[in-house]
Image 1 (tube, rainbow, N blue to C red):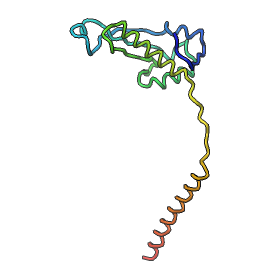
Image 2: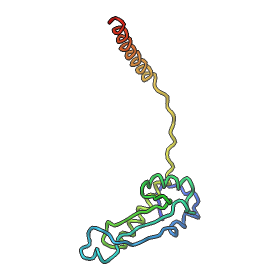
Image 3: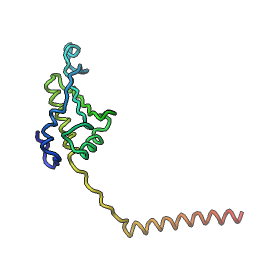
Image 4: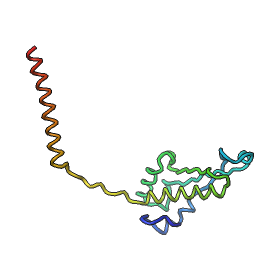
Length: 147
């Protein structure tokens, strides 16, 4: 399983067991297929229990759940559906490709944010705007007193 460059393996020995934790279920798919669509279960539903997985490190699990979004249910099970193709095998490969892509994305550590200070020009501009606003409010007060 090649997950690409830049992927960080955490517990490499257990990452090999990732394939064993995946369950594939074949369901009927909507879409193209003619009369065959009602008879043959060509769509694939891939299920992976993210929360109870022994193959993934805890920080990797957290990022995977965040990236997957609504595809992870309340029990922490990732559910991916593949029904683009007419054949079961092609949909199976598609589901596995989607899964590996999610794992690869979750494996990339996010860049650390570096704090930046406001520039001198932006500080001066902010103060200038505050002065202008203050002048407007002062003029309003003077008018209210005169009337």
